[in-house]
Image (cartoon, rainbow, N blue to C red; front, side, top):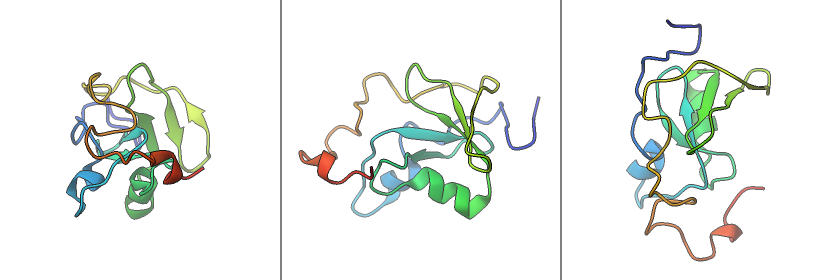
Length: 117
């Protein structure tokens, strides 16, 4: 089943922020968000680069879902509402052994000084 703006059959683009991973030097994130339309994994707005919102601005893809273990909420960029939605293709979250913030080895020791509040 495909709902406008949500495709439950699309797998996530990876286990971390695709844009942070491809940056030079590679970036880091606080939390991860998954585009419910195309599966792009981006970092949250607390993260320094805010790639999930940048993906929304670039593509117009309206819905994201948390990509954190134990969280299944959706967010609608158009209305600002937190919503429930369908189960998306697995995996539902980044690996349990990936720290938050992450990824391991890239987070600066003074990371709280670099986040957006």
